[in-house]
Image (cartoon, rainbow, N blue to C red):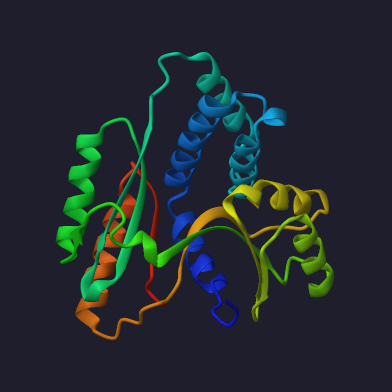
Length: 242
Protein backbone atom coordinates (compact mmCIF):
# COMPACT_ATOMS: atom_id res chain seq x y z
CA UNK A 1 0.00 0.00 0.00
CA UNK A 2 2.90 2.34 0.67
CA UNK A 3 4.34 4.75 -1.83
CA UNK A 4 1.13 6.40 -3.06
CA UNK A 5 0.57 9.55 -1.02
CA UNK A 6 -3.11 10.28 -0.67
CA UNK A 7 -2.51 13.23 1.63
CA UNK A 8 -1.81 15.58 -1.29
CA UNK A 9 -5.15 14.53 -2.80
CA UNK A 10 -6.92 15.09 0.51
CA UNK A 11 -5.32 18.51 0.95
CA UNK A 12 -6.37 19.38 -2.59
CA UNK A 13 -9.92 18.22 -1.83
CA UNK A 14 -9.93 20.07 1.48
CA UNK A 15 -8.99 23.32 -0.27
CA UNK A 16 -11.86 22.81 -2.70
CA UNK A 17 -14.12 21.91 0.20
CA UNK A 18 -13.08 24.95 2.21
CA UNK A 19 -14.48 27.03 -0.63
CA UNK A 20 -17.69 25.01 -0.27
CA UNK A 21 -18.05 25.00 3.51
CA UNK A 22 -21.83 25.11 3.19
CA UNK A 23 -21.76 21.89 1.15
CA UNK A 24 -19.63 20.15 3.80
CA UNK A 25 -22.03 21.22 6.54
CA UNK A 26 -24.95 19.91 4.45
CA UNK A 27 -23.19 16.54 4.02
CA UNK A 28 -22.38 16.24 7.72
CA UNK A 29 -25.86 17.46 8.74
CA UNK A 30 -27.44 14.62 6.76
CA UNK A 31 -25.00 12.11 8.27
CA UNK A 32 -26.04 13.29 11.74
CA UNK A 33 -29.71 12.67 10.84
CA UNK A 34 -28.96 9.13 9.59
CA UNK A 35 -26.73 8.31 12.59
CA UNK A 36 -29.37 9.50 15.10
CA UNK A 37 -32.19 7.62 13.33
CA UNK A 38 -30.12 4.42 13.19
CA UNK A 39 -28.58 4.50 16.67
CA UNK A 40 -30.25 7.15 18.82
CA UNK A 41 -29.24 10.68 19.89
CA UNK A 42 -26.82 9.78 22.70
CA UNK A 43 -23.22 9.74 21.39
CA UNK A 44 -22.16 7.61 24.40
CA UNK A 45 -24.27 4.73 23.01
CA UNK A 46 -23.86 5.46 19.30
CA UNK A 47 -20.37 5.05 17.82
CA UNK A 48 -21.50 6.17 14.33
CA UNK A 49 -22.77 9.42 15.82
CA UNK A 50 -19.47 9.88 17.69
CA UNK A 51 -17.61 9.46 14.37
CA UNK A 52 -19.82 12.02 12.63
CA UNK A 53 -19.44 14.51 15.52
CA UNK A 54 -15.63 14.11 15.30
CA UNK A 55 -15.81 14.76 11.55
CA UNK A 56 -18.04 17.82 12.16
CA UNK A 57 -15.55 19.26 14.65
CA UNK A 58 -12.62 18.55 12.29
CA UNK A 59 -14.47 20.64 9.69
CA UNK A 60 -15.03 23.46 12.21
CA UNK A 61 -18.79 22.98 12.43
CA UNK A 62 -19.99 25.01 15.45
CA UNK A 63 -21.05 22.95 18.48
CA UNK A 64 -24.50 24.55 18.59
CA UNK A 65 -25.07 23.56 14.94
CA UNK A 66 -24.12 19.96 15.80
CA UNK A 67 -26.41 19.95 18.86
CA UNK A 68 -29.30 21.45 16.88
CA UNK A 69 -28.89 18.77 14.21
CA UNK A 70 -28.96 15.96 16.79
CA UNK A 71 -32.02 17.41 18.61
CA UNK A 72 -33.89 17.96 15.35
CA UNK A 73 -33.22 14.41 14.14
CA UNK A 74 -34.19 12.94 17.53
CA UNK A 75 -37.32 14.98 18.17
CA UNK A 76 -38.81 15.68 14.78
CA UNK A 77 -40.83 12.80 13.34
CA UNK A 78 -41.10 14.88 10.19
CA UNK A 79 -37.34 15.28 9.79
CA UNK A 80 -36.34 14.49 6.24
CA UNK A 81 -36.16 10.78 5.55
CA UNK A 82 -32.92 10.38 3.68
CA UNK A 83 -32.17 7.22 1.76
CA UNK A 84 -28.67 6.01 0.90
CA UNK A 85 -28.29 5.25 -2.81
CA UNK A 86 -24.98 4.39 -4.47
CA UNK A 87 -24.40 4.81 -8.20
CA UNK A 88 -21.53 3.26 -10.13
CA UNK A 89 -20.28 3.99 -13.60
CA UNK A 90 -17.47 4.89 -15.95
CA UNK A 91 -15.91 8.20 -16.84
CA UNK A 92 -13.77 8.76 -19.94
CA UNK A 93 -11.04 6.17 -20.64
CA UNK A 94 -12.80 3.69 -18.36
CA UNK A 95 -12.14 5.61 -15.12
CA UNK A 96 -14.23 3.95 -12.39
CA UNK A 97 -16.56 6.27 -10.46
CA UNK A 98 -18.62 5.52 -7.34
CA UNK A 99 -21.15 8.12 -6.18
CA UNK A 100 -22.63 7.87 -2.68
CA UNK A 101 -25.80 9.89 -2.15
CA UNK A 102 -28.25 10.67 0.65
CA UNK A 103 -31.52 11.78 -0.86
CA UNK A 104 -35.14 12.53 -0.04
CA UNK A 105 -36.04 12.38 -3.75
CA UNK A 106 -34.70 9.38 -5.68
CA UNK A 107 -35.92 10.55 -9.08
CA UNK A 108 -34.23 13.93 -8.81
CA UNK A 109 -30.95 12.40 -7.65
CA UNK A 110 -30.90 9.70 -10.34
CA UNK A 111 -31.54 12.29 -13.06
CA UNK A 112 -28.81 14.61 -11.78
CA UNK A 113 -26.24 11.82 -11.46
CA UNK A 114 -26.98 10.51 -14.97
CA UNK A 115 -26.74 14.02 -16.37
CA UNK A 116 -23.33 14.57 -14.70
CA UNK A 117 -21.97 11.34 -16.21
CA UNK A 118 -23.39 12.13 -19.67
CA UNK A 119 -21.98 15.67 -19.75
CA UNK A 120 -18.51 14.25 -19.08
CA UNK A 121 -18.83 11.57 -21.79
CA UNK A 122 -19.27 8.80 -19.23
CA UNK A 123 -22.14 6.51 -18.34
CA UNK A 124 -23.87 5.12 -15.27
CA UNK A 125 -23.57 1.34 -15.01
CA UNK A 126 -25.28 -1.39 -13.03
CA UNK A 127 -24.73 -1.82 -9.26
CA UNK A 128 -21.44 -3.65 -8.71
CA UNK A 129 -19.96 -2.77 -12.12
CA UNK A 130 -16.94 -0.94 -10.63
CA UNK A 131 -17.13 -1.37 -6.82
CA UNK A 132 -15.24 -4.69 -7.07
CA UNK A 133 -12.19 -2.58 -8.04
CA UNK A 134 -12.27 -0.83 -4.64
CA UNK A 135 -11.84 -1.96 -1.03
CA UNK A 136 -14.03 -0.43 1.67
CA UNK A 137 -11.70 0.61 4.50
CA UNK A 138 -11.56 2.91 7.46
CA UNK A 139 -8.85 5.41 6.55
CA UNK A 140 -7.19 7.80 8.98
CA UNK A 141 -4.66 10.34 7.69
CA UNK A 142 -2.32 12.10 10.12
CA UNK A 143 -0.35 15.15 8.99
CA UNK A 144 3.28 14.73 10.10
CA UNK A 145 3.55 18.46 10.76
CA UNK A 146 0.69 18.24 13.27
CA UNK A 147 1.82 15.06 15.03
CA UNK A 148 4.62 15.05 17.58
CA UNK A 149 4.58 11.29 18.09
CA UNK A 150 7.24 9.03 16.62
CA UNK A 151 6.02 6.92 13.69
CA UNK A 152 6.85 3.59 15.39
CA UNK A 153 4.94 4.55 18.56
CA UNK A 154 1.98 5.71 16.48
CA UNK A 155 2.02 2.44 14.54
CA UNK A 156 1.98 0.36 17.73
CA UNK A 157 -0.97 2.33 19.16
CA UNK A 158 -2.91 1.94 15.90
CA UNK A 159 -2.20 -1.79 15.49
CA UNK A 160 -2.96 -2.51 19.15
CA UNK A 161 -6.31 -0.71 18.71
CA UNK A 162 -7.20 -3.00 15.80
CA UNK A 163 -5.80 -1.31 12.67
CA UNK A 164 -5.00 -3.57 9.70
CA UNK A 165 -2.22 -1.55 8.12
CA UNK A 166 0.04 1.43 8.78
CA UNK A 167 1.87 3.35 6.05
CA UNK A 168 4.35 6.17 6.30
CA UNK A 169 4.36 8.64 3.43
CA UNK A 170 6.53 11.69 2.86
CA UNK A 171 4.17 14.12 4.58
CA UNK A 172 1.73 11.91 6.43
CA UNK A 173 0.87 8.63 8.14
CA UNK A 174 -1.98 6.50 6.84
CA UNK A 175 -3.84 4.03 9.06
CA UNK A 176 -6.22 1.52 7.48
CA UNK A 177 -8.86 -0.48 9.33
CA UNK A 178 -11.78 -2.72 8.53
CA UNK A 179 -15.05 -0.71 8.46
CA UNK A 180 -16.13 -2.48 11.69
CA UNK A 181 -12.96 -1.52 13.59
CA UNK A 182 -12.79 2.07 12.37
CA UNK A 183 -14.64 3.68 15.30
CA UNK A 184 -12.53 1.89 17.94
CA UNK A 185 -9.24 2.85 16.26
CA UNK A 186 -10.31 6.48 15.69
CA UNK A 187 -11.43 6.84 19.31
CA UNK A 188 -8.17 5.36 20.62
CA UNK A 189 -6.17 7.93 18.63
CA UNK A 190 -8.50 10.71 19.80
CA UNK A 191 -7.94 9.71 23.45
CA UNK A 192 -4.18 9.83 22.83
CA UNK A 193 -4.59 13.41 21.56
CA UNK A 194 -3.39 12.53 18.06
CA UNK A 195 -4.67 15.09 15.52
CA UNK A 196 -6.30 13.55 12.43
CA UNK A 197 -6.38 15.39 9.11
CA UNK A 198 -8.98 12.97 7.79
CA UNK A 199 -10.86 10.05 9.34
CA UNK A 200 -13.60 8.24 7.46
CA UNK A 201 -14.79 4.95 6.06
CA UNK A 202 -13.92 5.24 2.39
CA UNK A 203 -13.48 3.33 -0.86
CA UNK A 204 -9.83 2.80 -1.79
CA UNK A 205 -8.96 1.77 -5.37
CA UNK A 206 -6.99 -1.46 -5.75
CA UNK A 207 -5.24 0.09 -8.76
CA UNK A 208 -4.94 3.64 -10.03
CA UNK A 209 -5.29 4.82 -13.65
CA UNK A 210 -3.29 7.75 -15.03
CA UNK A 211 -5.08 9.95 -17.57
CA UNK A 212 -2.75 11.56 -20.11
CA UNK A 213 -5.42 12.64 -22.61
CA UNK A 214 -6.23 16.30 -21.88
CA UNK A 215 -9.79 16.10 -23.24
CA UNK A 216 -10.52 12.98 -21.18
CA UNK A 217 -9.24 14.74 -18.04
CA UNK A 218 -11.36 17.80 -18.83
CA UNK A 219 -14.45 15.59 -19.32
CA UNK A 220 -13.81 13.70 -16.09
CA UNK A 221 -13.38 16.93 -14.12
CA UNK A 222 -16.66 18.20 -15.57
CA UNK A 223 -18.46 15.13 -14.25
CA UNK A 224 -16.76 15.37 -10.84
CA UNK A 225 -17.51 19.10 -10.51
CA UNK A 226 -21.19 18.56 -11.34
CA UNK A 227 -21.43 15.72 -8.82
CA UNK A 228 -19.65 17.69 -6.09
CA UNK A 229 -22.01 20.65 -6.64
CA UNK A 230 -25.07 18.42 -6.13
CA UNK A 231 -26.44 18.64 -2.58
CA UNK A 232 -27.64 15.02 -2.70
CA UNK A 233 -24.12 13.73 -3.39
CA UNK A 234 -22.17 12.86 -0.26
CA UNK A 235 -18.95 11.34 -1.62
CA UNK A 236 -17.41 10.56 -4.99
CA UNK A 237 -14.65 7.99 -5.40
CA UNK A 238 -12.55 7.33 -8.51
CA UNK A 239 -9.46 5.30 -9.38
CA UNK A 240 -7.81 8.30 -11.06
CA UNK A 241 -4.16 8.71 -10.14
CA UNK A 242 -3.95 12.39 -9.24
